[in-house]
Amino acid sequence: MKLRCRPLVLAALMFAGGAHAADPGMPDCAGVGAVRVLHEGLGAIESAAFLPSGKLVMAANLKGTLLRKDSLAAVPVQVASGLSTPGGIVVNDEQSVMVGTGNGLGGFFPSAGAAGIAQVDLQTGKVTPVIKGLSMANGLVRGADGSYYASDDLAASLDRVPPNGTVQRKWLSLNSNGLALSKDGRTLFVNQFLPAGIKAVSLPDGAVTTFAKVPVQRALAGLDGLDIDEQGNLYVVAYFSGELWRASPSGALCRLASGLSLPSAPVLGRAGQGFDPASLYVMSHSGRLYEVPNAVPNPVVARP
Image 1 (cartoon, rainbow, N blue to C red):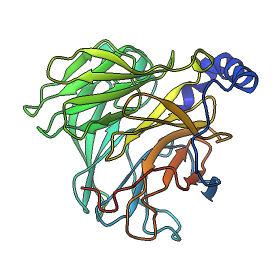
Image 2 (image 1 turned 120 degrees about the vertical axis):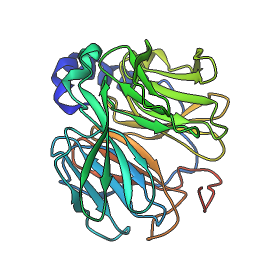
Image 3 (image 1 turned 135 degrees about the vertical axis):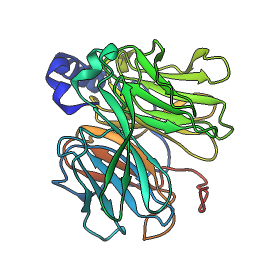
């Protein structure tokens, strides 16, 4: 979610916090370790992704920069700047990533096409615009066929860009935030920001179904970033309620963590550089980077 839009939903935040305190609405996941704060003062981090080596790349939304954390113990360093309110990240290889741009108030007006996708060289910091005319590009994923899917958490718009580069703005009229692809590449999972919902989109035909039923107490939780593991479990960040959830392949929800400060995106740990495949690393708009140990059951150490 774009941080500058937070005042527009302040009432939702206040209501959601009170409702959750009175009735949590879902069970806690078993066996999860205590949350650790790895860093503070990073700025508003919108998204993150691991490189093949296990280094972590993060998009600082308001600063327009990319940061890289080279190991669990390392301090993040800036590797690129000049990005217009960066959103989602797709990894090409160790040297470059694709980054959603224009992740701002233009999302209220999808027809303006104010967002896009840029390629970033992580060695030189060079930013090269590749796709223009998207609604927002808050969340970003790339399918096996090369198609990009970009989300808009401020309007009912989910965009698609097939391999020929044609922008299909508002491909689906669906409020969308975090995105994740199933391992067979046939299903796109979508976090709906408000009202909170977890949807499944059949990519062959665009049919939308509810994957996990969000408790009524969480209707204003504000679902943000999303990730998926090798077993098909989804990891869901609830921005306003300050929580991290896990949804099983059958859609059963449990809570991995609470009390997080403006969490924005989860990313599964990856072996290498000291990160733990059993942990989730959670970005935030408050500048904190969290680690949630033992959040991933039966982790696959070498993720493709």
